[in-house]
Image 1: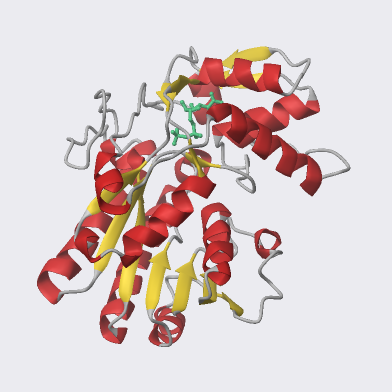
Image 2: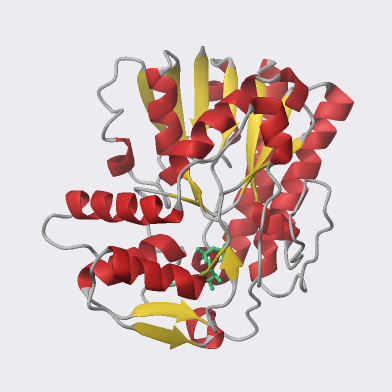
Length: 331
Ligand code: UDP
């Protein structure tokens, strides 16, 4: 199988690349290296079935050329990370909406199947006990840049669904809930690499707001095989499928666990949201997935606990930077 992964130099994309190369695919990564890095692909670079193409999903010619020589596409390229979205709303909107349209057109033209990576952000402020795929979306004002990501990804899903309905394109969508693991960078504000890096450096752990907001972190090693099974399962065409983690945990508990598990001398520093993200920022208080559709369709059953995730992320950070773990988000 000739597989294209857009955004394959990113955190999740690089794990997917390794997984598919091991499964016998030939893999072409299309990435503009804006937030991804060649470093993430170190383990794949010398594989005979691996090709890297530097380029943007906004470049229609490159996208057509790469996708035209493939059998299937995993579309992961996107502007992600709350800091990046808040700081560069226009670029994020263009990449996330127009870029996806370019990819969809190229897949239709080439007649290849597509898996679109979407996000739990699209549910917005819905704090339901379990968010199922047809749960309502509760979004703040589109003038608040945090919501531009959710808005853009919602449009992407609608586009993908329309290409499936109107043109018969084989599209499946996954909604990823706070996927974490080795190689995720703290540079754009993601909490797990931020807190683990701070604990390893002996710095205060920055907990935003009161720390009682909760998330269900999912491990990249649980999520990637499920993404592939979803791409290969005809019953998922035209559907969006949640892929989330096991345990609901508050950010304060996450920080306390990180300090304890890593034997760190760090303290916890509560940072007001305005200081972390600027004026007018709105956070989600709670985000809990209902994974039952993925369970039924592709036997998705996440097994990696938050403790294991913290230890794996710390181990990977230490081995990647023997001279000292670099700083994460700079505010
Ligand atoms: N967060 C935090 N400290 C950090 C980075 C993030 O307390 O150094 C909080 C953030 O405000 C949010 C949660 O952790 O409530 C998860 O943030 P992340 O950016 O990882 O994901 P998302 O907000 O998209 O769920």
